[in-house]
Image 1: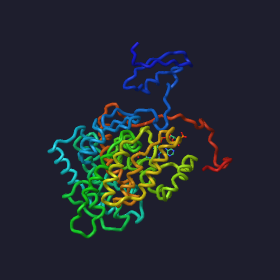
Image 2: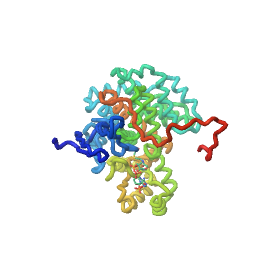
Image 3: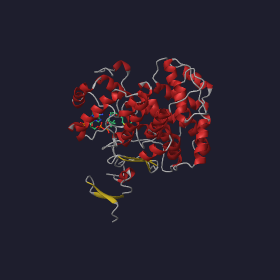
Image 4: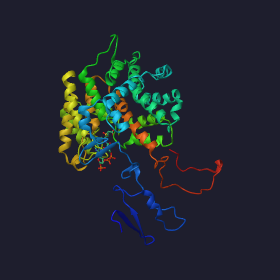
Length: 435
Ligand code: CMC
């Protein structure tokens, strides 16, 4: 018998089954052959939250959670963060290779010339409440692009796909900046094609009456590095949402809107905003031990700590700490960094965190940098959504081209009642009110 197989015995029937192991994985559908009778549906696997289920084959992002390794298309994240721009990395994620100089020039030119929004979208965005949170504004604005580009539904047309990819990467900063301007009541700023991707974003956020916005180069580069670090992270919650919605062949605007919705949650991208709230609540270094106690007693979560995949350290958190130093040289030190460092120091020595392999993740330090740069905390998760768009789209493109993929449709274990006798309204007597 081939060694790369798994043999299981069903003790209900005494039958033995052998199934192939490929890439350290068995196919869940092979378990369907395990039945007690011809009428039996077959054995299913039960895996809430996908703790041990691979949902796709992917050649985009590699993570080794035990060793703290993250690679995009085989290139270590540290190397890309040091040598590349965000748009170069977006190209790598989408097309599999780093661009040559002419390819990059064309790519940057294309993205730059798709940054404008249709005026109807701009007007649509004016309709939000003055105090709306940027994330739901972004979700609905991205979904609204679907009304402007109805041809985006041609998801099997490579040329159409590429057009929507360029539009989405280009327009995300424009829309994110508009959500901010909206919340502070400032007029929207149109894109400036002379500026780089991050400089232009800063221009649309912060330009006031000056005729030309000049971004601080250190801050623009720091933002670019942060964008590189956030560009993709294989099958996380929002990417899974992107793939799941995309698998129905919905257009990419609607799929990205779903991905942004998933990202907004506090256990995912929304954690960066929560970290700042937590640091505010702690207030000073002296209060850290008491807060750690609350976490250990189960009353709080240490936001920005822990990861489903990283069980050693998050390599992005290391680069972010380095970037923080560069930013603080320009902006001055954000005093919250001292509380964060103390939290990290105490947590990393504490049995509770050591035994659960809880380490700072990407969201632990990013918010402190963003705040030092002048972003309000409610914008932090939008700053995650902008760069992750390239990753979502690369994953979506891979999904569409994968012959093995079908509409995502998990199974369930039904736990409710069956074949109940209908009760007419006048005879119904509910013991408990429906909650
Ligand atoms: N603070 C305190 N305890 C924690 C934390 C935390 N941040 N994270 C996990 N634990 C505990 C958890 O209570 C559990 O303990 P026990 O075994 O006693 O029940 C144990 O560690 C295992 O945690 P889990 O919830 O089973 O782990 P998970 O893989 O399901 O969750 C996570 C991963 C990231 C959702 C979780 O660690 C968490 O909620 N962290 C805080 C939110 C956060 O920072 N999210 C950003 C994640 S990284 C970037 C991104 O994805 O956007």
